[in-house]
Length: 412
Ligand code: NIG
Ligand code: FE
Image (cartoon, rainbow, N blue to C red; front, side, top):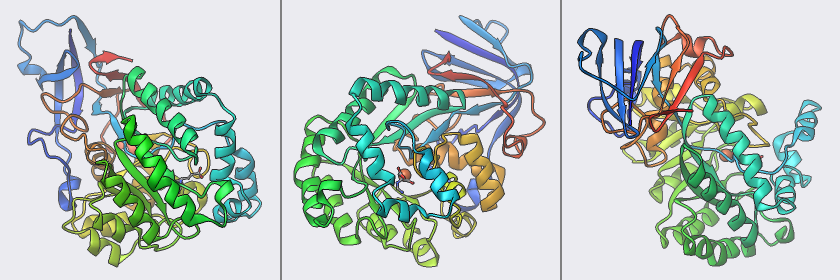
């Protein structure tokens, strides 16, 4: 099956060097081809070039005129909690009335609230609700997504969540990666017995998840009021025995030591980092760990934004992800995340686009196949309405300019 897109005003995110990630000053380089065409064959990008050089004999099964719109590689959203039951708008109102995220959690709301709902929801119903969100984010330009467990908090319910993730992976046209986050909060029955809960995660949950090959990564909410650095290290070591590489929640509510323990355990990413400072930046330098920033959470909870500018200026690469979840970020709109990166974290538009595409793919271990426009990569991309510049995408921060979505070389 061949798909030919013509009359692309700009083909954005062309990467002839097939870089696995972009760091520091390189982040502000977003190569484009003006007045371009793109050919996909059997779901992969097969060729592209300038319209004036379009081979006259080139024929495809489907031809699409981009009518002067731009083509961007699909967003690679490397941090979500998109499988959950119901919603938590009552806590949203509590926050408006002055309660903090931590206060709500201490009252037994927050993650435990979602865990109670998930427990009472069947696997089929969970899948149905999650797929609605998956379809929503696909329409908003996402072509690869990481999904975490962490609202189960018992072996049976964590497995239930991860089986839903597997089903999404098998049925949705996006690329999916799964992360086991049993240590998202201490389950209600274990309150006051946190170390026993950590034992359960290490001795029962991780082996059970691994036995069914349900997860690619292991995550821990390493933060004030949640899991300590020592507990995090134990869990990451238990995961490593089964080949689960860490991607962890770190330094969101306090400078918790999460970045250090993550890098020490060769984490693929450390995520959030609202409270990260120079020490964390120093730790991340010369590591393979991608700092992943979730500005939607800072926006929604009124927290300080992570220091993206200082990180990039120090030579780091950063990724942007949505954190789509019912508590801190009920949105998976990656275009808005890119806008927040620019508006609130002073990222240049090109830096923010790279962060939400190639570096997001790196943070899921899939940048060899997604995240940029390169021959051989999966043909996941979107066409915009005609827009005057790349910068217009984050600038027009609520305009629905993503017009047509293509996944594995097929229109969605
Ligand atoms: O990434 N910070 C921890 N976990 C989620 C929020 C989960 C929830 O409140 O349901 C996050 O923001
Ligand atoms: Fe999260």
